[in-house]
Image (tube, rainbow over all chains, first blue to last red; front, side, top):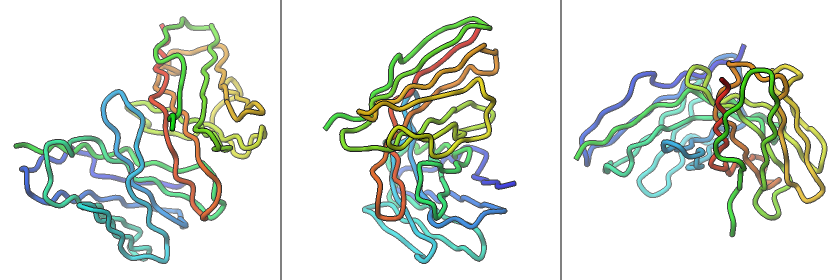
Length: 113
Length: 114
């Protein structure tokens, strides 16, 4: 069955450093991959989308890579700030372009001042 | 522009009861998806409605149902509640097109089953 794995343990980094979060998947060939941020008590918020034919996408301090051979995506936050502390979810979408996404369990990032 | 609105935000029910949750999507969004989020299973897809029709369905029992109205508002219903149904239920709306669905989530309805 389809499976997505994200860093299961919380990631603790110092302010100003680069945070790197990993998303690995098996038994699936996604048409695109998305990253969402979720704060406690709130719904996920969309951050970035990368398609299967793209290697890298950037948005301000965020960068995502997508390697369909390794079946892996890396999500980077450069110059991290305490306000970046949250849970980050990766989600896979198929070619059918619907609202059905497969989400990973998420990685909790804690940025310390 | 108003976001996705879910009501109620919190509710407590007892086993065997039923519950109805409501979702108002962003104006112009015709797709509404529902997800269940629990600490153990994470976010799991329940179903998706588009133009009042169920377009996709996740792997949940028939006790979970939903519908969409002509104004794109959606409701989901869970009958014969079980303890394991305690979860955060999230609704998301999306705008069709561009080959990928970016979801805008509501804040969720937190259901506790006692």
